[in-house]
Length: 145
Image 1 (cartoon, rainbow, N blue to C red):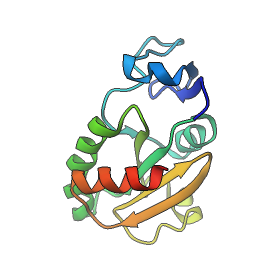
Image 2 (image 1 turned 90 degrees about the horizontal axis):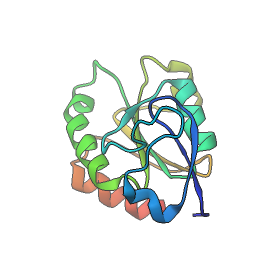
Image 3 (image 1 turned 30 degrees about the vertical axis):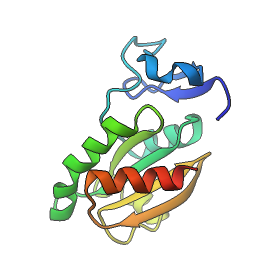
Image 4 (image 1 turned 180 degrees about the vertical axis):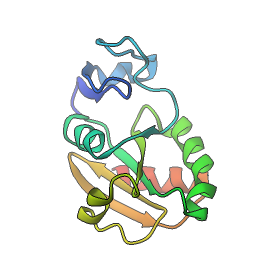
């Protein structure tokens, strides 16, 4: 990763420049002064997903889910636990396929829950099915490169 990194604020969507060596120092947004990382996934709509995908230097791990999906609800706390371990090295986000059906169709999301890892604006890996936190962490690290 180049230094400094671009990190999109999960609160106001401002793009911040953060030296890679300072990611673990609890950086705050230059615009809204809120933490750039809180150790939990952020909820993104289609616009927010595209902003993070386009402007953030960090790998983006997305959980595609729906409220009616039992396995999705079962995996939610596991994905949250994974965020506490994986941030700030990557951004974890959740995208509801109910609220962003066009995005789900564009990305050819056929089954949920599905996690997908994006780097440099493109998808690099995906995995369908509910997983425990330790498996999410191992999978993400394996594919983050």
